[in-house]
Length: 477
Image 1: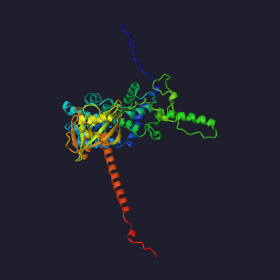
Image 2: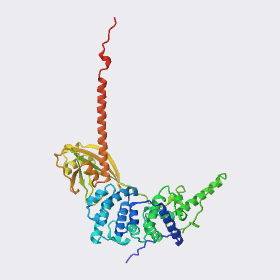
Image 3: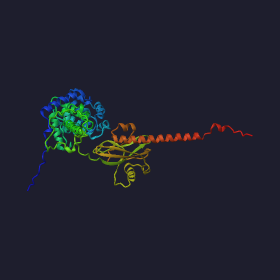
Image 4: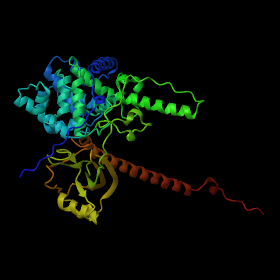
């Protein structure tokens, strides 16, 4: 007998969380007018607006969108310029090596993005004859690392496809404008956001409209301290008018409590009715509204999962000639293919991890036991990855070149680098922090030694004879 499988019920969505045809028209006009007057001038936008070659446009926007994932615009600008100078076309990128790509990407983080850009360039050149796919679905299908958002952004901005985009900024704008108070990460909420984005995108200027939505979220409708007075969509915003209404209610209440107090003048609501269905799944519950937050009641986010705590010992093996040993990480996993200092994972189960570190240095890296056990502690360096809070216990060992150092098979290889080579190689931000910590510690030790030398010289001066010592005292008769 086959059991009846209960299908997941569709969410109940009230009319408050949809746009009318007139609202769509007004939003397009107001948002594009605001964008034309206030948008930031960014290098990838300039290319998208002026480059006649669709392949060059698509390539530039694709690179910028991948770089902008999990990274601020201000950080990406210089990386983008450097990248486009080195590889101005997809063919140029395809002809490079992954090692070269990682070197240019170094410091930007989330290195799998760089690898996927390189893989995508090879695919476009070898499998698609150098021609970029011409719509969202084709971009998602053919390019590794390109999903719904990236495909929508590239296809609308570079290729003129009338598809909406939804990222963190757009989700926040839509949640406030349409009063969506459900968990922003819930799949049903996400799907509704995408349907709204596809509905309101301007078919004549889809790229500009999508960038305007993202720009509004990044510069005006921000997570905290939103500038509602500067927002072109203020009169169409449910969150804004709900905030005004709640202030109005509080003002009336205060008026009865304090008749002498003058009633606050508030902007009248442009929405005739902001009530919704009683059983709507996207509405913010009344008991969850915090009057002190105003529009910041939206969007509602799920609780963040706590970062995983990890720690490892990182050992800087420095040759007497100033070079340091770097080993290359595996081809897959976190920080794949990047170079790092020899690293030894530490766990809570280790009762005596000092001994474990010494043993690993001797057995896995060929460091003489006398050097390994007398290593110098530098500092604890903390680096936050997206889901990991990593603590590096940094040590330093000076070797004279007679030792034959090795590395375990989990690494792809090893090399000795000068300080200058280290900072231009494909090393992570975390390893650069480790190296700088060692530099700082070394400088402090040097300053301490200089200070002690000066104090020693000062004490010697104090022991010197004064001029009065050279005159003999005359005994009076």
